[in-house]
Length: 288
Length: 209
Image 1 (cartoon, rainbow over the protein chains, first blue to last red):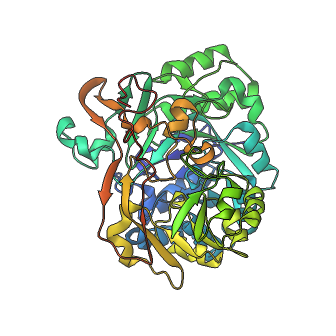
Image 2 (image 1 turned 180 degrees about the vertical axis):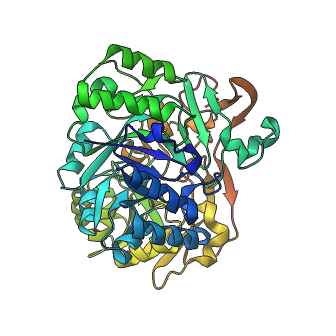
Image 3 (image 1 turned 60 degrees about the vertical axis):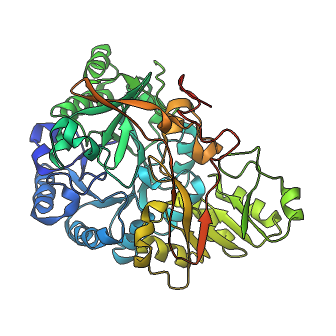
């Protein structure tokens, strides 16, 4: 089982935070303007890939989730760098996915969670044109994801962290710049939430994420058919990636620990959810 | 051209959608099957529709129904750049709907034979149409799969910074009218009914509807 995570920039890449993982996705897909964002390519991306390889791990490069025409030149440049030195490229835009499979047929292409792959039939089509791995649409249940796996494509699932509940054309934080006293891109370093009664969301760049942490620690056996487990940490504060990664590494290698589950609970600001794995509202948590 | 929804297959309202028999008795309509379902099922139901033009929201169905019908790629596929258009041309689609948020850059799209459809009137929402899981996250009702939106975006939200409330906001869909040119201009009406747009979402205690 491959344990993966994601990092937005070089600054977030300490050795200990990467240590528990087999592979790392480089770049923040929710906003191009994020400070030091590795999706923009350049020397930072080259250094990051080299660093990951020196640690004996795989480096995948992420691309901006919703690139408009004006963004394409930058996307092409970073894909060109990534194709030459990384172990794969993740894209959530179908046009970009098709571009990579055509122009770089030897590159491992990973269709990201925001590519909205809901059906085995879509997965089969993408697999036939060269997509190697799929992160299924976040709304899918375990049974739906198993059907995608049956097509032969590799499947990666989020086992812990905040999942996107949507992505839009504008930044969700910039409009609060004056209230917070921070402009773009500094405002992304601040922790903000939207709350309405029982519902909490985390705005971040063009995306808004679940306020709760999806946690499948108690249910990990049900996802064992997947090829990779992802810890979503791209928007998290220092320490989160390392602690959560260490706990899931222990879970994979040694099994369940009540104290580790409690530690996960203590890290989560707004509690746990199961996402959509059990065909219920994404914010509900069912204890194991 | 009018799009009509096929009951069980179109987004937002099975009350307003029509049965297959009702649709096949109409003249000169295009049929919306923009709910995400298994691709083979969509191909089969499209074979039973006598009209030539359908709108679809699932990649396998777009590729395969395009072999025998005119297929418009739904706005739910979130086509935002020329690479998307190139892909749908490769799949032999007839037209692609561009999200209304991109209306001011429609001229930058290279259609090369593919028709471009834009919104002349649309509700601009919290997220791109087709990239919103908020309803499913909050209440289990999925816009993409069940065709139901619980309008959680329209709630009044407290904005918390370092744990403290700094203001309130709402992401209620906003009706916009555009002066935009393309091959097809669409006028969205789905969220307008006798009661108006749902004020704060159907699960919110403050809802006015």
